Length: 334
Picture 1 (cartoon, rainbow, N blue to C red):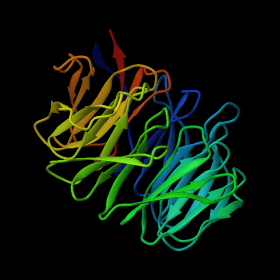
Picture 2: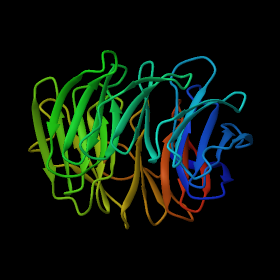
Picture 3: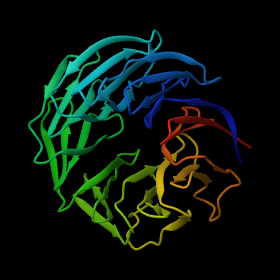
Picture 4: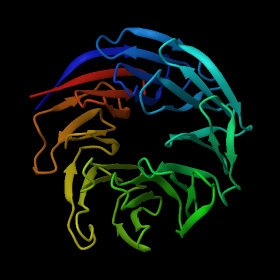
């Protein structure tokens, strides 16, 4: 397995977010300064330059499914904007407040957007479908349970599960520290948080069970699950940790340690295959197979620290955003 350069592009600022369109034909790259560029997957050509948010863009999210691609962006202006990706046209704006919109996540039919302690469900036309009661503290992460209408929101002190259809609170899980990241296993069994303390916490919501893994060097900000829901990758230091979540879960098991020479800053599993990409602040990007202890030959060194990793929908291309505004797209071969 090798990673070879496919193309590169340059933004005007730090790459704050990346996302492939559902059909894999475009890569959206958001600059921290505000603009969002839509790039052709095959060549890297700039298809459209979206204005984004003048004060700065924080997050982007493509609406899943077929049809004309819809991109949502959230910014420091307290707004969520909707764009027709094919035409490169702005279609709607939801002005939600004055706080930064820092988290976006598409559910089965609506977009979840969080700013400060507020959580909204938005329709694709920009109208507000529902405004939830405020969280006790600032919302730090959002995650939908696959295609089910169940949304997890995290904040300092715990996680709340809300129903995307009737808007009720289904469950609440107290946690006595800050939560940095949140992810569901694709089969919906496990809900995982990466924490400030530093640790990783696992809930099994259907069984009201929970597990804890500690011993990390730093805050755990990076989590990724493989498509089969067996392997959980976590990072809170110079090693990525790979946990086996099969059966009763990882408690009592020793994780595989995937070493880097500097702190890990991004993780991403392929969508349909089993490879994990990890990136570190020294610019190194490594591909791993959970079935092997050693890295694959696909190890590359970027000129600057990566900020985001994103696999294309067909797993052929790996997009890498950097702190200096460069966007690299590598092809996975072999």
